[in-house]
Image (tube, rainbow, N blue to C red; front, top):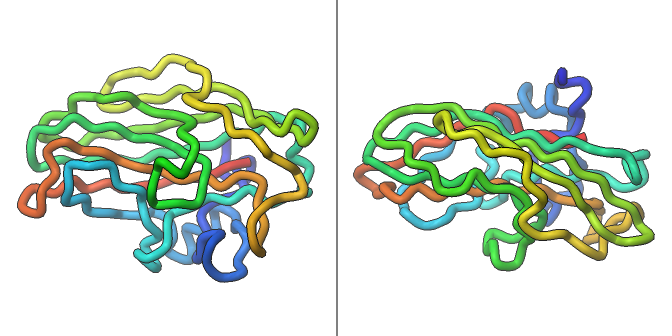
Amino acid sequence: MGLNRRPYGPSPANVSGQNVFAQNVQAALAQGVLPALQSITVATEVVLTNPLNILQLLGVPLPPKIGNEQIPIDVNLSGYVKTLAASNVTIKIYNGVSATVGNDTALATTGLVSVGTMSCPFFLHIKGIYDSVSGKFQGYYDGQLNGTVISPTTFTAVPTGITDAGTGTPPQYVLNFLASVTSSGSTPTYPTTVNVQDFSAG
């Protein structure tokens, strides 16, 4: 699926920041939001941040009232991971707006994958659908990390209270996707590098 079929990528500001709507992937690439390179220096879960402003999360908001309701959408997260110490790596996609993942809803995960000391590509893909009557966003995910294939699996949890009218303070959003990485061997001396080449929804 080409970039023009996955129009919504990260914005210069996330939904909890300035009044900036999700932009298309080409604009994200042009403005330097993508690719998003981040160095992880702790062994605990880290929500990825916006390379233009590390105080903001790397979020992909899905705007309201644009004809997505009751139509399947795709969410794509891809790039590479590079470890300097033997590590088990887990990559996840959430719906939410918080750097505290307990406040967000986990949707997709690679599960814990042994990466060793190397560089390897990854992707996580979500296929989902929402409607304002049930208020649910339901679907499945699949992916790949270091040769480990994630077979199609239903969402880890189902977001509820979803409405096509949107939620949150302006700019409003229907869903807001975040990504996190856990690398068990990450330290300040041996950081794990994560490069997000594509993070998009639509």
